[in-house]
Image (cartoon, rainbow, N blue to C red; front, side):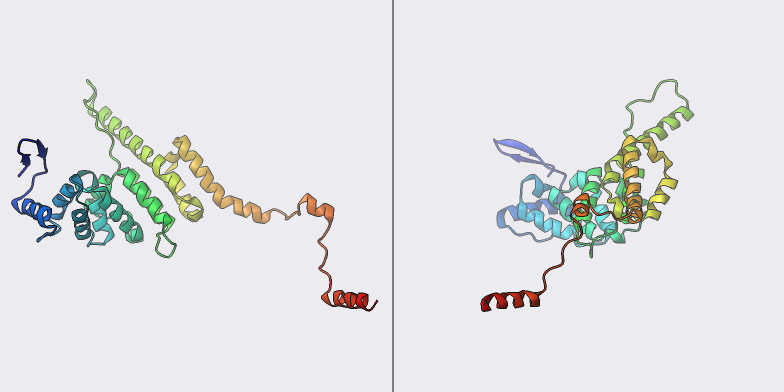
Length: 276
């Protein structure tokens, strides 16, 4: 069932399917129903539904795969986006994870979860952060949680592997080159993610801890500007509270505003004018 041949017209390449998966696809195409849709068969059927624009089957597969609403399960699901998931599933899973991102155990304790986060595309993490920020405050996670997520994702970014090692390089030189490539990949991810953080909502203590733990952030001009703006968010309000309140020049020239006329005296004046 790896190749489906349309006689005399064309040849269409399909993913490797089991007999059960192919039978379910054939049944849905002829009857619009499906008999056995499970978490095991849904990924392959979802890829076919996305390939042949079967919107109803795609919705059914998304519903099955999103039954597990735990954050780590959603993270595992998003890690397979490049390989087998549709854009529809990615959007639904990202929105669902944004609603429960505050329950993510950051930093991730298990190696399998860190590996899943490393496989999640950077564009999906950007979408996750912006989606969480757009949610109402009562269901959204804190900016500190989004900051920790951005830092952990950047630390897990994998550098591009060179096609060939330089000739004559020693093991120490190769290790040093690999470490530099990892730092460069992390820095590029931070330049993409940190400007998204709403720094006025970050406690000043968290910002200070970040600067003490990561002095290397000053090595990037973009991140240096981001850090300077973040520091200004916490220092400007204090300066404004200490500044004296001076009325504008126009108000000083006109003097204090006049008090409104008394209603009682206005009524007496109007009655007196009528008597006259």
